[in-house]
Amino acid sequence: MSSITTRRFLQTAATLVGGLVLAACSKQEPAQTASPAPAAPAAAPAAKVYVVGTDAAYAPFESQNEKGEIVGFDIDVVKAVALKAGIEVKFVNTPWEGIFNALTQGDRDLLVSSITITDERKQTLDFSSPYFDAKQLIAVKGDSKIAKFADLAKLKVGVQTGTTGDEVVTKLQGKESANVKRFESTPLALKELEAGGVDAVVADNGVVIHYVANNTGSKFKTVSDTSFAAEQYGIAVKKGNADLLAKINKGLADIKADGTYDKIFASYFGATAAAPAAAASK
Ligand code: ARG
Image 1 (cartoon, rainbow, N blue to C red):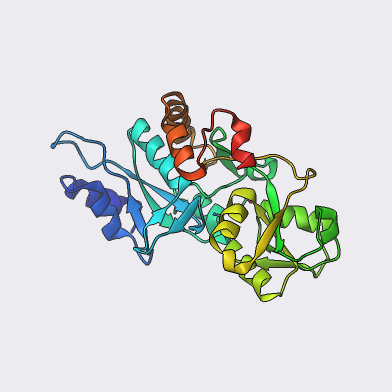
Image 2: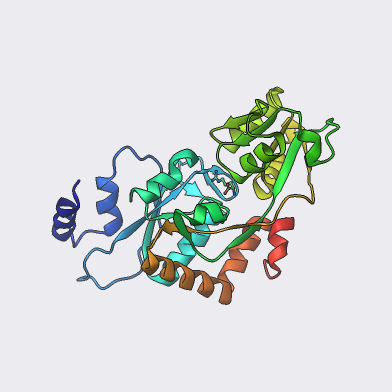
């Protein structure tokens, strides 16, 4: 739909609920959830619905439940931020490999996907202030002799393509290494570990810990390493979208100040986020 037609369409449909209008326009996008619209006077025009892209195969941060709804820590954070910011959001499952492009092209207004804020990414998109501390963590079979990251130098290691896990393993093994096994999603890499196709998987600690705890049949254990750098997740907007970024940052500050963030954090990680480092060690 061209933007002019879209505008006209939205104007005509102004009395309809914004979420329904946009849902009707969207093409082959499957699971989507909309946060409740903030109460608005009946006569108000339909508000813009901000489309949030997320690679929903990254529990407990973003995943799809049995009903196909996108749920998780990141989702709750963005819903709470949106409520404070007075904006409406809907989440659209977006494969990690195309996620940054989708933002640049304007197919998504926001990204929340456990995205580590990196200098390289900052060149092509803008990040909110950090909302979560993370670190890489190694998953191996329970009987593995692997004890530290350097042990992976010559072994087959599974990573999700284009993640910070991919980056650190590629750096350790060298760009030409054929032993870095790249997967579309982190769960696929972990399945391959179970099948014996790789010796280890390197991914974000929260996701690895969650997977190991929820798939006890896989008999994995985790190996941490002090050489992994501290990472922080940010919500991404298109480069230069200062308006939206300001709203998001204000909303984030508000939910941190009034205890909403801590409540969400505790509901997923069972402890208070009062000390930022707590996030990384959970
Ligand atoms: N934090 C890592 C990165 O930014 C991995 C994020 C992957 N997220 C996801 N939803 N698959 O590279």
